[in-house]
Length: 517
Image 1 (cartoon, one colour):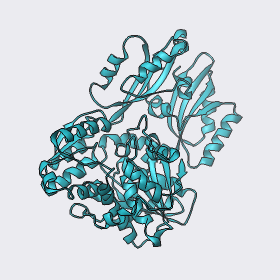
Image 2 (cartoon, rainbow, N blue to C red):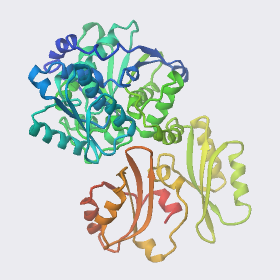
Image 3 (spheres, rainbow, N blue to C red):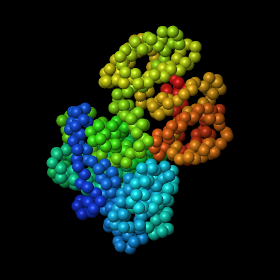
Image 4 (cartoon, rainbow, N blue to C red):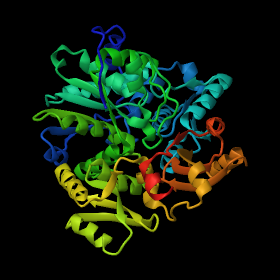
């Protein structure tokens, strides 16, 4: 989705950042990151694509800029007492790195689900670490409480003028480059990076033609919601895959600047982010973390409708959890729209498979799963690699002409996250067919997450299906079937809502209906 921002026409809030950015002290810990021409990505489209390489910073992320600029501005008394921060990784590394440079005591509160690579990096800078909370919001509450109790200076990850100014030095470096860019794409979590870069670029008269876009992941689009309602909105649930931008509410100071300086916000899917990770690797041989590739995913989406433009994306971080790579690889083909997933109904009789395979011809089959439904019909889950969208449309025409009924599950959450990895089959008990309800959720990746859920769930309902898939990250995808004989179903919904996890019902999902019901 792409949403235009009707800018206010004034720089009431952003004006002060020109001075703050110009005076920002970041280069004791940061480099002036290079801008790389992405020849492979450019060759795929009709535009010249560039990457601002913040993944090459000493902590492999832009966060050292804002953290250092804030911490060095503290008074001697504040520095002596020390600082505290809450972060799942990159901000923690930025704060720890700054404190090591300035020899300041440092305590970082990190979620217990934080990737080991980020925890180890923070420790290597000499910071003390407190692992507390399943997510960053719980860690934040702990950090704020400790800051008050121990009289420590709290270093906010994004909603602070000096942090924003530190990140804004990237905008200054972009304008010092020789290239005449038409648009710049910036990832959005809390909005500090977007506010900083946009405030500098938008307020330089010679560069009014440069469009500035914030890019968010669809399942954590707090800025998009804020723009829609013209006020900051707190998301009820936040997707955890791109953990570096998984923020439930955009910052206040940031939002004030964004409304004045940014042209629009673009949302991208997890699959599109995975495809962008692959793109960055192919051009730079650097493995970007998901949040680090968000801006490029938005650029690619925007670039499909234009040509002969110079577009720049911020490659914001490379602190990827290695165990997550298998998931990224798996989903990158879907993100590039090269792999399609179909559920096809075939007659349960000899020769049906052969007839279907003749339709596929020489198309590359990536997956083939069969499940007998009853004595008359069967369902086949097929993965097909297609060269173009036109070739996929032609295949669907052939299927229809041959009287094969099918559902396109390419963008289906249950199909991609669960069905392709499940064994077993349909539930043939009539009572369960009428009462089973399907929900999907995300559990924090910790030893007692499943146990705690089952204890809280109790014995009032029977669990009829359960699939738990660890993605090598801070969370796992969960699919659960629950027998519910209540007439209105409200009691179960209220019970699930009272738990520590968010559930989305998928009982009518085509993937479930075809293969599992």
